Amino acid sequence: MTEVGVEPPDTSISDTIVYITGDFVDRNSSLRVIPEKTIYQDGEVARVFITSPFSGGYIYLTRERGGVIDHEYIAMSGNTLTREYKIDGSYYPNVYIGAVAYASGYTPGDRNYAV
Image (cartoon, rainbow, N blue to C red):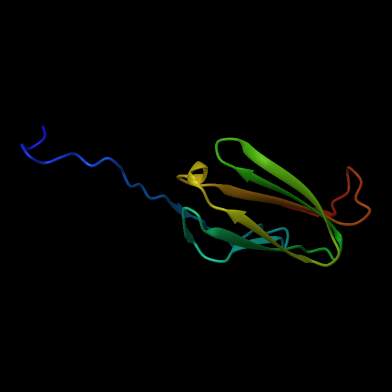
């Protein structure tokens, strides 16, 4: 119900907050995914630092939210990588970054990978 003489607003305001947790370390590897901070606002850029147990090799990254949003397969020259992701409403309420590192010369059946 609207009061007499009071117009309802023509616009609405919304805000999205995304929480990012990280620094998960599998007990069998030293692959780490470390976010720059844990809370991002809509429109901000999330920076994620990834360390691999291998010098060189490859990193397979996924962004997931109820399924895979997108993925990247990246050749590495060292053992660290930084990725940036622009935060928007499609990330609400959360998004996961998955990472798998492969050593150079990896072949199926090898144990030269980390999750």
